[in-house]
Every structure is written in structure tokens, then in C-alpha cells.
Length: 339
Image (cartoon, rainbow, N blue to C red; front, side, top):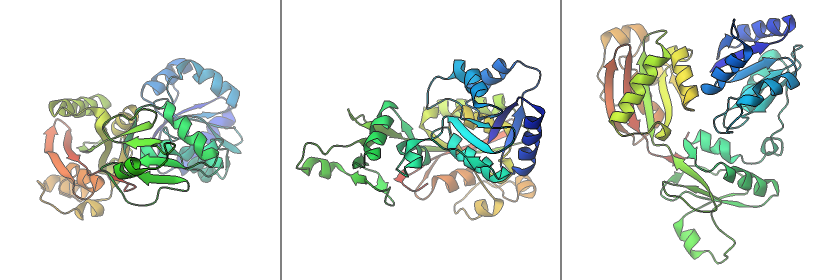
């Protein structure tokens, strides 16, 4: 994850240095000479996570002009400059601020302060469910309706249609199909959540994102090159970026800034695998000795995409190279609870 950092005191900057030293997962960018407003504007433009080290009040006032949509806003967390509390204040679920806050709190031995109702009441969170299963939230207002029922200990009903459900989803969560709806004796039983490509009125609609992009690139490949290559390839295949569930690569690329910026901007999961995991992927792939000698696996993009997409996937675009980038695109079989 690429995280933007602002601090307001020497203590704050010293705490940031401690976090950067201990955090092996993330890449950090700190405010330089630009004004904080420009720093935050560009952060929200790319939906990059923002870490404020200082007072919550300052953070709230600074981000207020940029808040727009809970599905696309930057996740924002605040840490006091003594490093006692880590507080997510924006985009806790879809943006991942709650999860990030817990992780950073563990790194510095602090207390994470989570205030989201479904979290503190240990209830099913439908927006996290959508994110983890590669489902696009069509009508975000439906999230509130579903969460409200769960917080009142009422059952909710999720229509999965043609999509297989791999495991139970949670307490008070009932999976239903077309036959169940057709044969239900009570008019009060309807779908609270609809998973499919159509639209169901009065339900929270979740659209399955069917594609996974596998990518390989040279070190320090610029964001603009990555964006151009991926968007052009998707356009050529008549695939919209909103139908992409994830980008996959080798773990050597997990801190590649261009990839992190791209996946953040387009709200995509970025999943990486070790060379050993990629070599375990079955299938016929165009292998490169140079790539194998460099990374330990002869084909990064196709193997990563297939590994991420899972069983019964279909390769839509085999490995293609453009400048410093290789791309493959795979169509996954959507299985609820599989990711």
C-alpha cells in the first residue's frame, strides 16, 4: 500500500520514522515543499491512504474540502504524536482505513480506536463483504439499510442467483436463490442484497467484477505508462475498468509505486505471490529465460492472473508486452466467499 503522511510536530515526524522502519508492507510518501492542500488534493485524486500524525481536529478541517463519496474517498487515519491511539476517520470499510489502523497500531504497540457500528457490534459488514469478493457496489445508500437491519438483530437475505456460495457468510445472513423468492410464503421476505448483472429495486445491488489483470514491469515503471498500457488493452477488449476485480503480480513488485498508485486510483485489490506460488500454477505459459533468471519464474503476468482468478478461469488475453510492461487478462469464475 502507498501511504501519504502529514505530521505537525517534531514528535510526529519521529513517530513516522519509527513506523516506516517497522512497517515491512507499505511504501510511504511524505509532504515535501508543496502546500498541504495540494498534497491532500492529489491524495484524494488517487484515493491514496493518508496518515495524519497530530490532532484529529486538524485532520478533519484539512480533509473536509475533498470529501466526496464513501466509495472513493481516501482512507484517512490519525495518530496522536505520542503514538498512543490510531484512529480511522474516513473510508473505514471500503477504503480499508479500519484495517490499516489496526495494523499500524500493532506495529507501534498502540490502541486502535474503531467506531464503525458493525465492527464494534461484531456484525456482518456488507461493504467489506463486497470488497473482499470482488463485487462493485452499485447503489451505496443500500449499505445503510442492510447495516441498520443487522444492528437491530434482524435477518437479511442475500440473493446470489447463478453464483455459487462457498461458505456461510455470517450470523443473521441468509443466502437465497430464485426458487426461494418464488416460493416464499411471506411478502416480507425479499432480497436485501442482490448479486448479479441486472438491477433489483429496493435492494443493495452488487455487480460481480469478472476480470483479473496480471502484470509484470521493470523496476520503477512510471504510473502513466502502467495506466496507459492497462486502459488501452481493456478498451481494445471492450472491458471497463470497473469490471476488474484485482491486479496480480509477483511479490517482488509489492512496493512498486506505479502499481500501487494505479490500483489505489481505480480501487482495485493488489495481490502478489512468491515465485514458488507462481511456479505451482498449472497450465501452458510462454516462458522467458531472462525473466526466470531475474524473478525465479518464467512468466509473471499470466501465472499471477490465473493464480488470483482461481479454478475454471479463462485467459482472455495472453501475455502481451509494451515498453516496460507485460499484461495478461483473465476472466474468473465468481464464487461468493472464495477470496
